[in-house]
Image 1 (cartoon, rainbow, N blue to C red):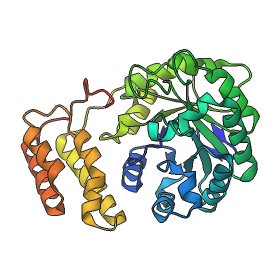
Image 2: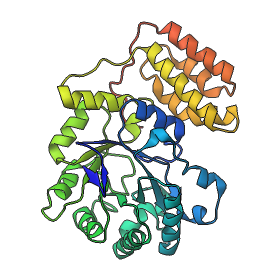
Image 3: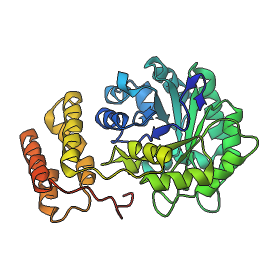
Image 4: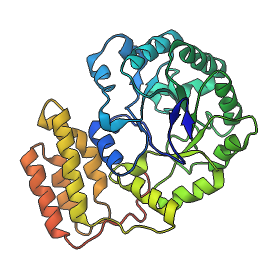
Length: 337
């Protein structure tokens, strides 16, 4: 698979861009476990052109990231063009446009998935961003606005025609948010469209190797993108790759191995954040997902999610490792919350 002149190999696995999730420490863990392509957290075009330092920091790219994209979103075409030029200066491998975020604070203001309600503007925005930069430009979107309006086959063609070089599709509408099941049949329709020649990346509900293979077989996409299924389980990329290549399922990791990885991610956060408390707060979303289905775990979980002291976090993690030394993490029935 190629994006522009960027060779990504056969069936690359993408880590989906997620706000307050795909920061340095989490990308580092996913890369270590076999994610092929990274994205930054998605970045507001308006904040970027106003030179908001917190926003610009999100564009920091590390050697381990590559290949990596900076994803931008916005409702104003001129702002998006300017933001794309700023993003290009950070030297990502490609730039991605967010046409898929369903959250009210974004879609409700005409950005992200909100542009699915104004397709001429969406296509014009993509065309202008493509013209403005030398890097390849890709897009991520959804099937449509709701179940009565799912124009993804036409949208994908039109984006391709104005120069978008790959399209990632989340198999839900904006109205679904993250509820219900992803519709990979419509993703398959895009891939099987004889007019489509750019890569199609499938996304939605990949929470394990067997789901990944089933969706791949159904759709024939060029790449798979994993988002929420990787939170608390960055080794899902290794597990999916192994299953696709061998047909064998790897054993879930032992709890002490999970603890070791949590400590490694915490260390990455501590090195990146300005103060330890901010690093711990950054990790809480992940703490809540790293240890599913452990027996009698509630008290330890509460302690882990309440402390703001590094030494106490390490102590709790050591306690978890000792208490569950012989247990493997059980991923059955955990869903994608």
